[in-house]
Length: 149
Image 1 (tube, rainbow, N blue to C red):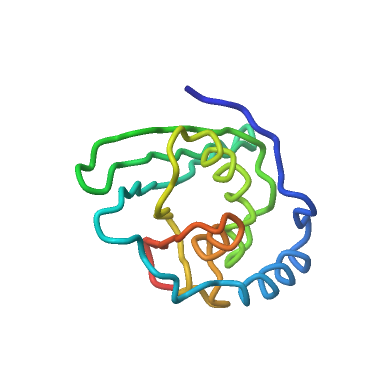
Image 2 (cartoon, rainbow, N blue to C red; image 1 turned 135 degrees about the vertical axis):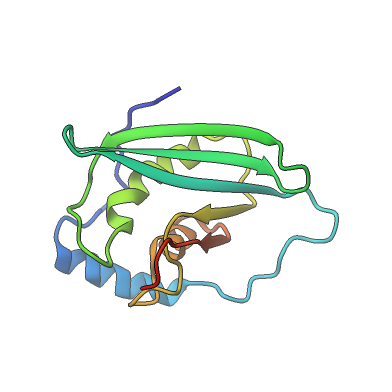
């Protein structure tokens, strides 16, 4: 089921300069040494990805939660919204995060770990989509990018 969302986080940047400033400030908040879950604790892994409808200026995000031990799907959610930021290399998170945040909020499962289609720390400024999402949500995140930066 698709849900429409035009929600943006407060003070969402509208220019490249604003986005760069936010990225440089937030990257200092990345937690690298967080302990993992205790042995035997239930763990849900959530994969997130987005797709674009360029003709209608829309972005659609999907979040699928799996039981990490059985790989059974335990929840899924989607969100569709307007593209919130122009395409600028290195600033992809500003286009995708609003819809991803909405999809994550709509999940009927607690994300234990989020796997993103994008960079984390292997980003030119050490703050790609996965790192950005982790700072905003407080969730452990891993970025899995298609190409080397």
